[in-house]
Image (tube, rainbow over all chains, first blue to last red; front, side, top):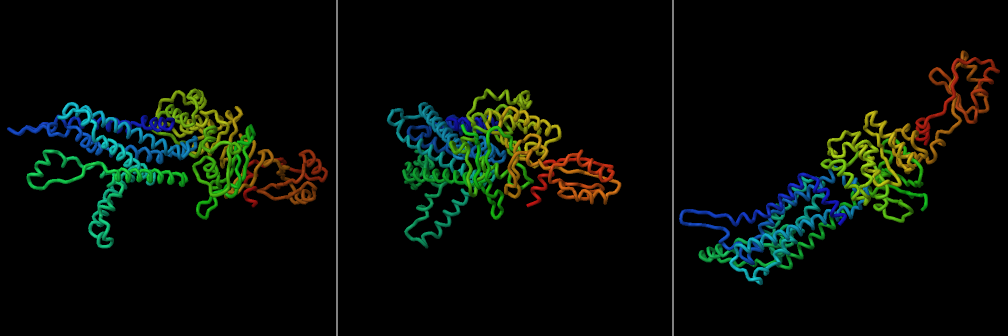
Amino acid sequence: MRLLSIELFKLWHNRISKILILGYFMLIFSVAILSTIKVELGPIEFHLADQGIFNFPYIWHFNTFMIGLLKIFFAIIIVAMIGNEYSYKTLKQNLIDGLSKGEFLRSKIYAILAFVITSTLLVFIISLILGGIYSDYNELQIVFSDLEYLLAYAVKLFGFFSFCLFLSLLIKRSAFALGLLAFWQVFEGIAYGLMKWKLSDYIPFLSAEDVFKFFPLNAMGNLIKEPFSRLSAIQNIADQIGEGFNKDYDISVLSLLIVLAWSVLFLRGAYLLLKRRDL
Amino acid sequence: MSDTILELDQLSKSFGNLKAVDQLSLKLKRGNVYGLLGPNGSGKSTTLGMILNVINKSSGSFEWYQGQITTHQALKKIGAIIERPNFYPYMSALQNLKLICKIKQCSYKTIEEKLDLVGLWDRRDSKFSTFSLGMKQRLAIAAALVNNPELLILDEPTNGLDPEGIHQIRKLITTIAEMGTTILLASHLLDEVEKVCNQVIVLKNGVKYYEGPVDQITQTFGYFELKAIDQTALKNFLKKLPQTKEVKSENNHIRLNLNAELSEEELSKKLAGANIFITHFVKKRPSLEQQFLTLTKAQ
């Protein structure tokens, strides 16, 4: 708790991170705004909330996916909170004042955990409210089915933030760390393309997908698959044009494990970096 | 509780081929004011970095409080200022000190007293980024004192300050030393060390050249500066004295270095007896600065 309070103290007294954190939590509520989208085109009236996006249990999938997109906001905070410690040389001062390197890292991890938990709780509450208003089904066992999406959401966020923490400790400068994150995303895409093109020529029993699912960002993305093609409206259209989707939208245990394994690796790597370096 | 706060044993640090600190052994005892002397690049800051947990040692060891507690626990009981003051620029002086109290696990109660001591209580709510360098350095001292440390480590505390700032900091250090706090002051400014320290450690190229009380390093038999109408006669006479170590012509006077006690009275009587009439006659003791230069040059 002491370590967490140290980190929150640092974040709370920084105006920019305060605005970003509050902004992030506000944005989560903006999903609710989606429910008010109504398009009237002459005789055709389109009300998004009526399309079934807020139906239980589908809402768990939809909201965790949509709100999950906002994680980049908090990624900026994490990268900045490490970058600042280096540029202000306060990391050095913290160590001199009697924080150990392990404690320093733990204070950051606790802050991330606190954030992930708050965010997950908020998603839970908002989904419950929106679903309560708009859902066609309100039986308890339907409402509380598919809650594993929340677990996947928490793991996805934690994995992503661990990656950000590692990158920012590696690079020490916020802007470059974010750049590397973007670069890594592109790199995974290119690597996938290359593997799809050539991998089976060399190793016939391995498909590109088999390898690709172990890449960190892709594994995080795989945790919660896009929910749109699951919407009944879109399913109907697809069926009509004879192109039915047969996608598995469930959370796979393997993906969860892959992301957790990456998180452990990133945090361990971050600790070793910190420990080895002279300041 | 034992007197030894910190003990270094053969502590070394290399950066590639360069040996920044070479097998340094030291003991810091409670109640002393230590001066760590050495020219720039002599390994002072690297040594402090190692004992302060920010630089990894290459070999050797050090122990805080006879190894009874880990380094980071020990650091909570001491106070240290290195090179430049490092604080969160977006926080006020008061917020910065509160954060340090959280890290050091001490109460907020001392904050007012320490800010008052360094004359910053009125500026407690100003952001750190608005402070002048002198104020930042004073805040650093307040921060280092906030836990009532048993040992205060200062690395070049007056570096980059204007004369006014230097004076304020020195006065503060003297005040703190008088309160009985053990101090380790690293500096290349010798008069600074001479004024406040009672023990000195001299480092050059990472090697310890001298360790001991300040007055011992400056305690020699001193020297005379003389001028006479007949310089050659004076020189020949001085060379025959039993207390003479060396006779040198310097500028337009003669310098007599001694290897035994010789008072002004005794020498002037002897000179009068030899009919040598002098126009200039002073006995001097070398300053720490001169001693330091001879020490580091000699080897």
